[in-house]
Image (cartoon, rainbow, N blue to C red):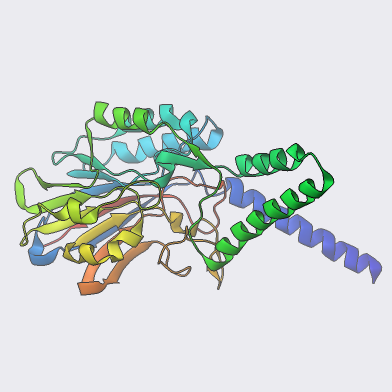
Amino acid sequence: MNKVLKAGAAGLIAFGGALLLYAWGGERPRMRVQRYRLTLPGGVGAGLRILHLSDQHFGGDSWVRRSRLQRMEAILADLKPDLILLTGDFLHNDAGLDAVEEMLLMLPPAPLGRYAVLGNHDYAEYSYHAFFQNAWREITAANSLQLSLKTTMRELGQLLSLFWNIYRNDRLRFAAVSNNTRELRELLQLYDVQLCDNKSCALPGHPELWLAGVDDLVEGEPDLERALASVPPDASLILLTHNPDLAYSAPAQRVALAVAGHTHGGQVVLPWLGAVHTQGTVLSRQHPAGYFDDLPGGRQMIVSRGMGESTPLRFRCLPEIVIIDLLP
């Protein structure tokens, strides 16, 4: 019996290790193309093709980053979009700026333009390494046993609070290390990507079809009312928002179609339980990305699984590039 228990334990450990290895390297480079076909009110924009890219989370050079860029190049080479929308989190940290530029060079021509909004990680990296490093520094800096114990309990409380927020599916923000947002903005401008910071515009040749973008909900200064202020009341409106929470706010009821990212589809999606965490949005663990038509007023939303990750794991949740075809 003892040998059977040991063999069973060893088997479980091996199986768990294999699953972890697969989640780390099995799905992350395997980018898919996800296609949607939908209609805007009145058939506005019929025949247009939209390329939607989100959540690249580019960091330092790695085999996953290289594989992802190669796969992206192969996919984009065959696409002829009319409009390109990018919904933020280009960066994981500043080491990914060169990969952002490489991606922008790959973008195909788009007659109606390229438009973007920033995500929370374009402003800051949430670093587990910095989190534990800061905790250790605080503990070791204590000059007495009593203060050391008090600091240790405080840092342990912060760690437990972090896990509690994951369990409750609340928003996470910890150990934020600033990213080089200024250089990212300059790169977007250099490669003819219009950054929609709480702004709107009519699409060229389509005065009935407008586009609006809003700054990030967590790290930016979003002002949806300002973004929509100049949109004619009878126009069909596409909203770019990194965080899908904003699509459920009252001012967004004018929107015909929202496109968003941020959730990464949950990254790790368990059978029966759903996503481990959805980045703390209003979306459920069972439906953290994809097509939504349950917004107030029957409005539509597409939430991308994203192309990268905040934590280097994916399980039952392939990264994706999104194509949206507008129908009559």
